[in-house]
Amino acid sequence: MTNPINGRPPEAVYIHIPFCTNKCFYCDFNSYVLKDQPVMDYLRALDREMEMTVKHTTPGVIKTIFVGGGTPTVLKPEEMAYFLKSVRTHFPQWDENIEFSMEANPGTTDKDKLAVMKEGGVNRVSFGVQAFQNELLSGIGRIHNVDDVYRSLENARSVGLHNLSVDLMFGLPNQTVDMLRESVSKALELNLPHYSIYSLKVEENTLFHTLFNKNKLPLPSEEDELEMYLLLMSTMEAAGYGQYEISNFAKPGMESRHNITYWRNEDYYGLGAGAHGYVKRQRHMNIKGVNPYIEASHSGLPRLDTFRISEQEAMEDFMMVGLRMREGVSDQAFRAQFGKSLQDIFAGSLKKMLAAGLIEQNGDAYRLSKQGILFGNDVFGEFVGVLTEV
Image (cartoon, rainbow, N blue to C red):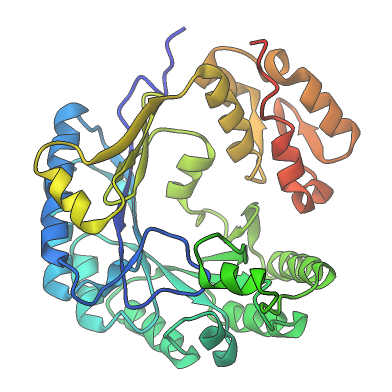
């Protein structure tokens, strides 16, 4: 059976801008402090990668573009204009309802820069707010303060950008349940269409990991963290926001369409230093360092690694990422990608999770139950490594 999804070019583009004003204490992303970095050389290398990418696979109509980092908004207005022109040059066919998102840090978005972004096609901005207490922000290495949040959102709206989102975090050092309640309340007062609310993960190669190993990271207790998650779920629901994915909440129709591409295990281009892409069941990862990436782009695609994904692994990925969404996974979507039914492949795991009350069935779809949301990682793990016989 022909695979209708993997038979067409990707309709989503991820682009990585790896520069930041500073490195946050919890961050393990591929990012580098901006000072003395060859920014224009990097943007020219990115332009070359785009050019070579579209030569290898002719892109179709692009439905979503997401620029992440790092902090893409550390680019100066003229650098931003160059970059956005590159995107438009190499991916010229845009869906009339394209979602073009860019991550931003409060304090790095003056009106001039936001106007350049809007003119270049950006129509959705996601601000990394994290908390509404200045002491928490400085404690995690953020350089903005709460006033910067309000100013940045006001600037965005003043240039005509209204599809805005903010990120919040919970489980931060010294954060209390009441602090999270205050942050969520202040965030909701902004009346935005979308919120992402993540729990802190202590990742290797971060300052927090070093402190954690020395027992010097005052994290909330597991009980408090669970209370925080239950609080934010009930508060967001009461305010009219659907929890369409484990960590994401939106007004109806305002979900992040780009991220849904990942959660549906669909193809996307990945461009820039350290970026990952997934095209025709082949994953790639680009070279991470800024200068090595620039150097590699002179002689071809700047790949660190490229590998085929077996059908078995693709099926497992489909379940793991698809179950993150509240709509869950459907037999129809599974058949569209693999030409087989969910029940044929995962009967044992589905039966076990249904019996445990961690997933529920609705027609041909399976999704996490309310209890299952709290134990998502346990559920996802049930669908990994079970297909050796397939």
